[in-house]
Image (cartoon, each protein chain N blue to C red):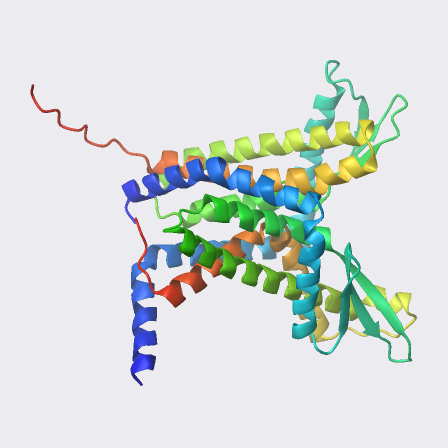
Length: 193
Length: 193
C-alpha cells in the first residue's frame, strides 16, 4: 500500500469511526443496558453446550455457570460474569458501524459472520476459562483435593493469561478481522480502495 | 478437482491482493506476542511495570491533591487512599496502567511500513496523549469511587472507561498514522478562464 493510500484509508476510517462506529457502539450499549445481553447469554450458553459436550453449562440471566463433577462424588459450580464479554460485543458493533459496506446485503452478511464468530469466541473463552479454574490449585484447595501441576495446566494458565492480557479488552478486533476474512474468502470479491 | 483448483486459486489471489494487510497482521501479532512474554516476565514486571504503575499513581495523586480538584489522598506504591474522612481506597493494578494498550499501540505503529524517521515523532505524541487520557481515567475513577455508589464505580471502571480507552487508542493510532503518511500532493491544475 502506498503512503497516499494509507493516508486516505486512515482518514476515512477515523471519520467513519466517530461518525458511525461510535453511535453503533452506543446503540449496542443501550441494547445491553435494557437487558438484551440476557438473550445474548442464552445464545452463548447454547453454543457452549454444543462445543463442550463433556460438561454441563447454564445461564442464570447474569452469570454463565459451569458445572464440575468432582472425583469423590458430588458437583461444584464455577461462575463466569457475562459482563466480561460486553466489551467485545460493543467493539464488534462499533467496527461494524464504522466499516464501509458495499450494500445493505453485504452489510448484513458481514454482520452475520461477526455475530457467529463473536458467539464462538465467547463460548470458547468461557469454557477455556472455567476449565483453567477447574484444573487449577485454587479450585483444588477449595474442594480439599490433592493438586499436582501438569503441562496441560501450564498451557491453559498461559491461555488464560493471554486472555487477561489482551483479549479481555481487545477481543472485538480479532473477531471482526476473522469475520472479514471469512466474508472475503467465501464471497471472493476483490477489495475496494 | 476443479473445485480444489478454484479454492487454491482463490487463496492465492487473496494472498497476493492482501499482501500488505497480511504482513501488517503478522508483524502486529509477533510484537504483541513478544510484549505478552515481556509483561509476564517477573524481572520486567518488577523493574519496569511496577515503577510505571507507581509513577502513574503518583501523578494521579498529585492531581487529586490540587486544591481546586479537592480530593485529598495519600499515595503508597500503587495504592491511593482518601484522607480527611474519605474512606475510599483504590489500587492501580497491572490492567489499569495503560501498559497493555501501549503495547497494542506500539505494535500497530511498528507494523506500518513507514520509515522510523517519519513515524517516531508521532509515536511519541500518541504515547503521551494516550497516557494523558489514562491519567484522566485514574483521576475520574478516584472521584467517582469517593463520591458515588459501588455500582456507578463498577460501571465506569469495567465498561465506560475500558470501551473509551479502546476507542481512544484506535482513534489516536489512526490520527497519528494519518499524519505520518500524509504528504504534500500536487495542487490541482486550474484551467485558465
